[in-house]
Image (cartoon, rainbow, N blue to C red):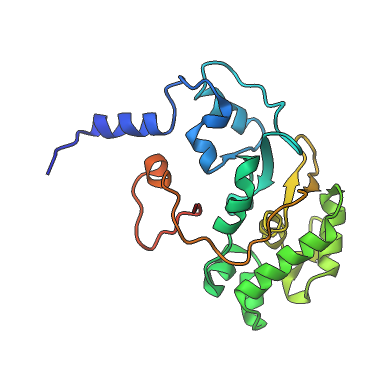
Amino acid sequence: MPQVRREQVIGYRVGAQGLLRDGSSLGKLAVLDFGVQDSGDSARLAFDARLRRTPSLRGVGPGQPLALAWTLRGAPHLHRRTDLDWLAAALWPLSDADALGRVDAGSTMKKAGMAGLAGFAAGAEAMRKVVTAPMGKGAASTAVTAATPDTMHRYCRSCQATHVFELVFRMGSLPAGIELEPGTAPPVLVPRPGAAVPTSAARRRHPGWFACSGRSTRTCRPAIAR
């Protein structure tokens, strides 16, 4: 068996993550295959650590090459626009148990006898029907709450209102064909014209997953398939 030194492994990880600051094109960065989380200036910092020059993020948003959307774990990430449809299928739950484990309404849905996949699909379908034009998060949440069963709702102390569970709302947005308008707070949700509607989970792992993220186990399902 070949011997690999710790320094070699670390060097490979640095190179695979694109942290040599030798990149010349934002759209070609390997990390965009899986998305770059954008909380505050985190995406800009991630890109700056990989490119020769500090990038401009003017090409992000509806109609632009990069899109901001709630994707992995329901957090806002930047993705290539051309990747959003396959990403929606890649993030669709594999099973009822998988769906219940992803959303904060899982325990409530389980107690009520609602199947995880059915609940996940109901949230996405409600999002798709409600957000047909740019809409603020508050208005969208109110409308989605009215369009979903009570088992998917909770009382929110900070809002002083009952509304749909946060992760049901966020994780249903991508398969509903919805992206976010960058720089808006609260977020403005925007429908993507022509977005594909996933009907089942993609089960084939993206070939770049292990190159960027390292080892995995058989029970660990990388959230990206292609």
